[in-house]
Image (tube, rainbow, N blue to C red):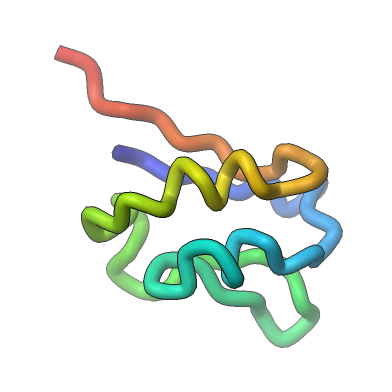
Length: 66
């Protein structure tokens, strides 16, 4: 999977980091960020739930095609 965070939309609610802390964190300004090496979700089953938990829908998760 491929995870994208729209930093122009993110408001720093932190729901992603609370839901999937092995993949998401918050940067020094409090906005969502991916942990290093977790750009593909690291196999965490909570990534999709973390994206759904975002109140402003700043996280997009795309499954590989083909």
